[in-house]
Image 1 (spheres, rainbow, N blue to C red):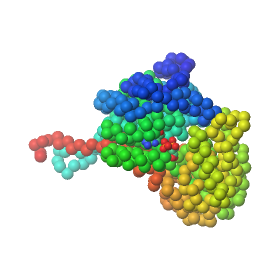
Image 2 (cartoon, rainbow, N blue to C red):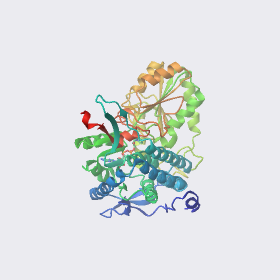
Image 3 (cartoon, helix red, strand yellow):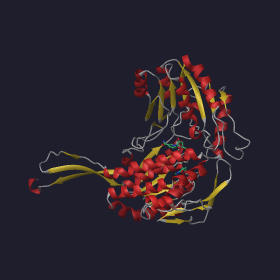
Image 4 (cartoon, rainbow, N blue to C red):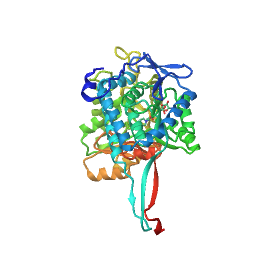
Length: 502
Ligand code: NAD
């Protein structure tokens, strides 16, 4: 790393060279798994092994939770302003090591350095936002029916937070959970996705450099059933915050609720992008392509259902197919998107496309694995547009989490809203129209946690809440000050300042 950063910003020089083995991080130390078992992490762009990763089991999770339990009271007893300052120092470390962090994100996801840099910026913005909330940690001061009595509410930490995340935007996913969990005075045990262990490993190194006390942030790598499940089951974990699939989310909800732990679920989406007949078609095409294909469609907020008014359907379809034909798939900065995260996911999508074809659904473009120079060994899917799927077909109802969109044709806004809502999910939605009335009707009636007018289906800002309805979550929100509600509990205080008056 370039020591200039350290000199200029007063941040530490941290070695972020990817090691041959990625250990856990427990009680402030890099720790091998107790049983010395490791699993390979593959580069999605080449299929080659990047590193071996700690294959943790229940005893590793227990050790991390114990470390967190020991450290939490001390961390909680520092003021929230000081905790915010420590998180600010960690964010400055992230900023100073942005290029190395981007290389790490690129190495584990196969996305271009440019896209990985954008992800780092998102994580840094979240860090600065949450750190500043240390000085705005508001409760309420309010009236009382009783004289000489003041009533107020304050936030209090929960204890140990178990954080389990998906692979799609690994560093952003770490930032979205770790920063608010720590600000609220909890100690953390983080279980990163098995496909993306590197950014969490590097994040822990930066946290140590930023003087986050030992044991306050612990990272346990491994598979979901071996390392994730024991974290959810552990009676000493007060809150489980999960980002991932509905299937796993349901299991986690069941297990954690069984022991009355708090659970935050950020799950999947099958997000509609509606194009009305008064839309700016050129820009709507661009938004549809970005929503469906950026990050190889691996976004919970991806726009995978594009619902187009009859009157402009043919023109829109032609323009979209042409635009998608110009998309470049690869890992270079000039490319539009890279591989999907693992071979199993790629094969699942190919199978879904084949099954769709047998039901008469047409593949307008793509539908196959890319091969040849630059693609061999990697998990690349050609950008795919499907047409002719019914609302109840599997490709309409199931999240495929890849570069696949399905086109639908509707007559009216009523039909569009109905189709948009005909989904088990309710995460994000977008409408393209020049009519304020249509936009308002759509905003009011669409079942989604986030709505965008004349924009893509994704793209959230750190100070605003993000989350979904129906099977997309359980009602809590990440980001914004709303994230603090996940990681803290309210305490109501009645302060009688004249006991004689009682
Ligand atoms: P996944 O559910 O397979 O895995 C997510 C995490 O859960 C991983 O760390 C995995 O190891 C762990 N896990 C698996 N089984 C477990 C178990 N039994 N107990 C505890 N942990 C377990 O999800 P994925 O395929 O990696 O990610 C894609 C999904 O994530 C998509 O559905 C996507 O929409 C969703 N996602 C949602 C948001 C959001 O904010 N709503 C953001 C990003 C991704």
